[in-house]
Length: 319
Length: 64
Image (cartoon, rainbow over all chains, first blue to last red; front, side, top):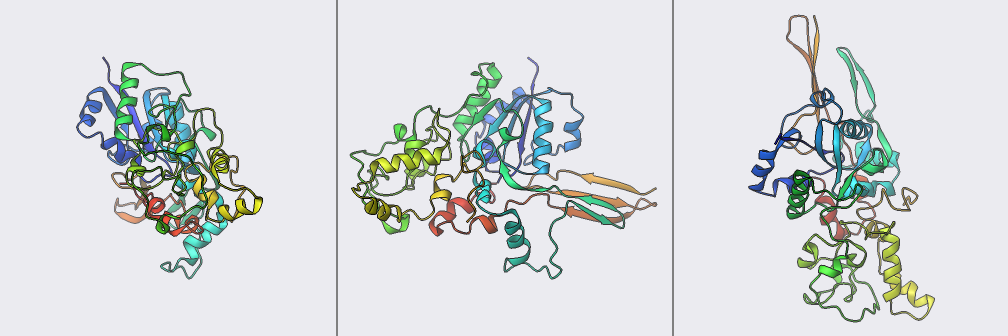
């Protein structure tokens, strides 16, 4: 059997998805046995120009992580879409913006000003901000355009499959690679490497009646390690988040922040969560509701921690 | 003749980088530019987030 051509790319990302691929450990050798890697900046030395020379459709599988933050991210996404038979949005950033899309709560110019002019460690007396073009005596230089919105991958190109997680777990990654190698793929557009049930479904904590009198911030409470965190008043996104991660955060006594994304059929994870906590608040009057809601310090940044690009809010909220 | 060598992307590190090397007529290096074509803006979007949430946000600056 001919080897597959495999590309792994990061756009606006942290590299954690790439490291998660390496975390399949010795199975990486099995991947190398069935696949020629044609692009993987974190580990290998291929250049964009090499990929540009490849024929359309000549990459069998591209695992694309990272959000679309600037024009370079978009150009590479378009190039990899053209060259790839199967393009996978890999990880929360590619699927729904992830952590970088928290920037959609801020204004583009405020971001540039803060980063390049105001931060205490910055020395920039001439107030220089990044430009897309810069002439020099030896030749012109070009930087990508910094967009005013962080996009998910499928907001700029067609995506074949989605593998959620921040990052996806190595076990799930291995299952995805096996599915591609064996040709045993689900219908196009499917989410792979996650459950169709909520995180609560795989969470081992004891669940009883949920009646929330107040919400706690994590430093305000010592939680019972056996009991449901949401019942104890910690904002846990488990009820509205796909399972499949193995409840890693909850095992570390931290509530879920929703990185596996919304359940099947749900468009807006944050709105769904607001609706769920509305149902479990132990309040009888609007005033009591207001009081309980005061305990939620940062609703937008918490309920849409990994999904601001694809949320109904999009960039509408500027703080 | 002067020549331009572009290394794009630079690899085996976390992040994005590009190097442009300009050679003069003699083939010696005239000038080199190291460029970072990436910005996410943690410096700004961490503002307004609860402090106890930051360990799980800024850990995504670099996951390598």
